Length: 444
Image (cartoon, rainbow, N blue to C red; front, side, top):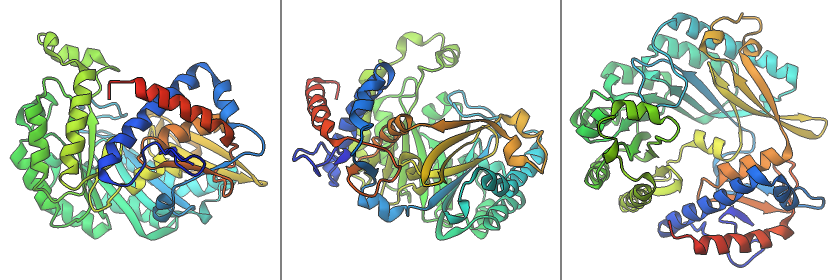
């Protein structure tokens, strides 16, 4: 039974999840309703989820066959966090810092990578059975990394881990800093995918978001990148303050003629840090849109506009053309293992000890601590804390992450991927409940 589509392995009434573009939006919105229900019960009634999932003689979780074809079961991802930016964007939630102490950062990133195998051996993580098929340089502004340092980081990974011959290696780029020589260096070093932080093709929008570039410069940089790379993703933002529908439609129309096959389209969230935007726009507060109403309107326009350009809406905020999905992000959504190097990075590892699987999450220390640890215990000393994830927490996370995609997950008798216990008999009740809730909602 598909979760996300919720499927028809057991029941004849699948909820979304077909592969035709016309139903992608339906599947994703349906999944959002399911998520709302699950999150509600996560907070107030763990017994509800326990009764559904944690039973004897139960089913296991596995992936849709499509995901199995993309990500072998022994896939492992590596994330390198580069926290430096020339300036800090007001809307960014990631840990970042201004450019200083570069040398200490690079030395310790490499030390951490070299020392990680020692730590993995100590905790019993069988990294040697894993194949790295995605490496992601995120930030921050990773194209502040000079080619020499980038080569040293990559070589330390290449020399210490087993890589797939088709490993996806992505670097995020600020379009304002893209140069011909830098692109040549990236190509030479084996980078094969770039993600460009465009944000918008509106000059007004760029200024609202604190960007100094202009749409023509951004378009020319994308075209320059396409001379070296055929796997290009861009980040766009919608619902920034005072954005009009005409501006959104212009962004979509601009995409039509660009050599890109992947888009991450994010809504600007002002709820978590209202003071930032209110401080910048204190004289114009009354003109801020009704966020919820505009979200639904803009979200639909984005979906149908990009669909008409051949993009598949495969995850809540992600669109792909020619099936050029983000391999690295699929690991997050499908609960694969990944290693995070760098300050405030996160790792999720599955330990196989005596036939029992144990999932742990490793959270790294912030930058000020990161630059202080010694070489001999570099990976260990960079750890802030380690969480052991129990079955119920794992189920919650698997549901919340996989339901972001249009494919969801499957529940079946065999090939229990996570050794988690799931009782299928209760899905019929949950299925009925979801139908009732969904049919009464009108905000979609």
